[in-house]
Image (cartoon, rainbow, N blue to C red):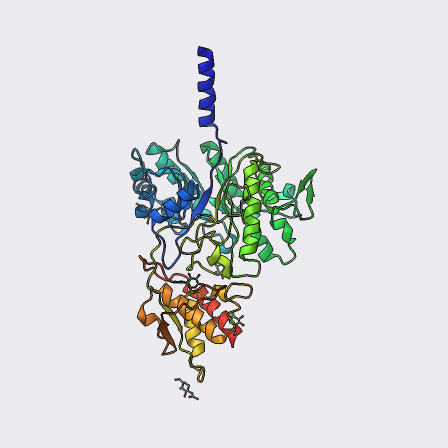
Length: 479
Ligand SMILES: *[C@@H]1O[C@H](CO)[C@@H](O)[C@H](O)[C@H]1NC(C)=O
Ligand SMILES: *[C@@H]1O[C@H](CO)[C@@H](O)[C@H](O)[C@H]1NC(C)=O
Ligand SMILES: *[C@@H]1O[C@H](CO)[C@@H](O)[C@H](O)[C@H]1NC(C)=O
Ligand SMILES: *[C@@H]1O[C@H](CO)[C@@H](O)[C@H](O)[C@H]1NC(C)=O
Ligand SMILES: *[C@@H]1O[C@H](CO)[C@@H](O)[C@H](O)[C@H]1NC(C)=O
């Protein structure tokens, strides 16, 4: 009897401490939007959809404290522009941990599990600007965590873009870390190994399709309809498996045999490009969740995989330098309403996720073109302004507002986006007399003319440069 009890106790303990115990659902929540939902609304939404892990891109104290007592696991982020000071000054790292971690760790506080130090710091587009600072910043934060007594429970890591490794011949076994950062990667991996830290990688089949017109479309999805890629007796039928195993091979080649890999971002956008739409997003997610539900992992990384969807909601102020789709990664719209049916549990049920509750919108007012088409002289400049400071990405070919059908409607869309993003400021619906505020819904069945969320936080415009470019592109295609 006693031995039985011991056995049960052991089994229970083994279950508790098993690193591969059932993974939940994780999401990224980015807040580069003109208005964001309240953290309390987000938390309810996560609970309603049984999402139990969230990854943030910073560690804003006010936001993080809402997660206290919710049971939701939180990954805090350190933005790239803080890496240098954290790398150069250990006291800064100590202060960072004190203010942004320790304060939340009281009994019943926030379940912080990982600190993501930097975000894709070695991305080729950054021209190496974070190469010298990432590793020292990681070490300083870990040291500060250890000193504060959190080192066992909270691990540092760095989300990397999958461009840190490459495969010359397109088979996973040819994978290797990019030569310009290989030494840095080895240092970081050895450090993760010593500290039991996981490796975070962001995997984007959509971007493979976007960047390579010749990419076999079906290989981006999980339906098994692509021509398989053969590699050392393994048959790869989707890009996710092939990509993750390329990472495993790259690690093996530098002597890392076993390390937890977490997919830091994965998802599919719904606007801004012909391949970015609700139909393909639904296909991608349903395939992905079904695969995750099998808990089979990949050929070289079998078992359950921890992952964070990218993203929870759309962000209308993200830089569109990588492409207009950047503002449309949300599984949910800007206001927390679901875009398409998807079953996070992987059972394939065709039902909508549960949307955000209690959302408060501003007045039912839209800003539209005043309809005088006789003299269009002032239109190009004003439209360019609206698009560069607002968001015209849904007007793109293949996107939901591309077929509005008239120049007036196009202009209205641009004006309204700007007006809403400016919290319905009356001054923001002038455009040298070309615009007027109306109370009739300007939306069509396909194209939503959104109403801003109340409780709007005013944010500085940070991506003006790239937005102006988009504005001009839309402008040129209209005239
Ligand atoms: C805590 O995190 C916030 C948000 O990321 C940051 O602005 C702040 O500087 C951090 N605090 C310290 C003491 O470093
Ligand atoms: C990287 O270099 C390119 C080309 O010189 C430049 O256009 C870009 O702005 C640079 N990016 C950063 C983040 O420094
Ligand atoms: C059109 O409007 C512009 C700006 O108000 C004005 O300068 C121009 O004379 C107008 N053209 C005609 C033909 O009315
Ligand atoms: C509206 O704008 C989109 C995007 O620039 C363009 O493709 C479309 O042809 C425009 N429609 C009209 C009627 O000008
Ligand atoms: C405007 O109309 C669209 C399309 O019918 C609808 O989805 C949206 O909820 C409406 N907006 C408001 C504020 O009533």
